[in-house]
Length: 194
Image (tube, rainbow, N blue to C red; front, side, top):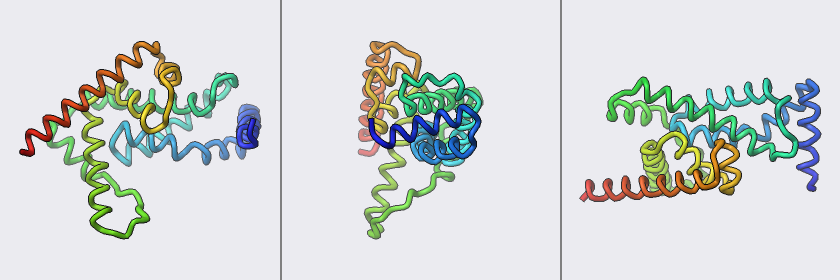
């Protein structure tokens, strides 16, 4: 076991005993992965910030239920993905027209800091990020979570199944369907552009 795993275990034990500093260390260690997951799923920086805060609030209140035999990162990302799925479901209930939704999302999208000073590269990267986010919106919330956990967090099928309370075969089926939907959406975009 590495020193970092030992530190994390210690922080978890101390946080479960009420140590605020230890919990703060867990927040610092996981705030970026949680935010990135939320942003990939929600496509909105403000909602991703809110989801990140809500995730850590839930982690704090449910830390006593955490099973130390399970990887902590899987547990915390599971909480974040479930919160985002709920947000997406509520968003669909209060739906806007597609053009209004894209305009709202586009207006709130912030550019991630780039170390590449080339303006053309920055513009191309920004356009790719927007295309990926738009493609992800074509998926159901659970399929979006599965794709995000697989491709951005390199989770195994088993870890995704555990995070989303699905069977491994259901995860494989959802990923197959999600990839097909993404491919069909991309093909439609290409035909429309021609």
